Image (cartoon, rainbow, N blue to C red; front, side, top):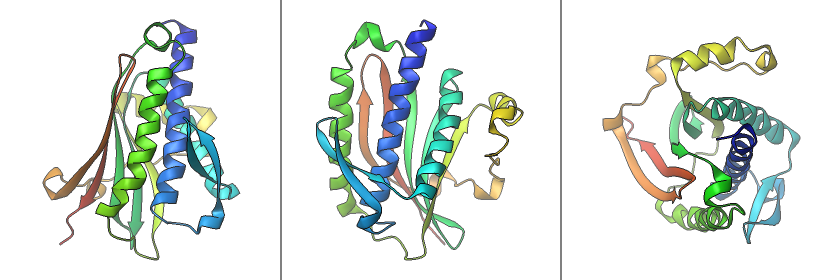
Length: 202
């Protein structure tokens, strides 16, 4: 992959993550509908939060996503919903592979069809989920290699938006998870498995 191809791959993936995160927040009704504005992307209506605080938080998170994508070390992205400091639900983007975009899909036609289908699937998947508690908040979490996490935390570009490593008590055991498969993006250039995980609380 050339440097230009790599940057294009990262930009396309980060744009998808941005749209996905905003639409997850809209679909899960974490904020009033008035906080969002609609626009067209991938041939469908998508939603974007217009509140500056939400936008800034997501943008700062995406900078970290781009850093890890360029190093090919991003393993998972989580959109977590918490209440009483407990994760009640999380959307999981399991990044299985990113290869050259231009050679296999130069105009992103196939990729955008997958992204479009995911947006439609996202909104229909809400029938399987209970309403979130009224005091819920959200956070974005990343799973990367340990060595790269050290390099990232030492990078001065991210000093104003530091990331904190999860403690062992925050890690949810796989045998305590209820999993709902949502969608799989499976092209020659990008493979992502998207799930909803809900912990089985004691």
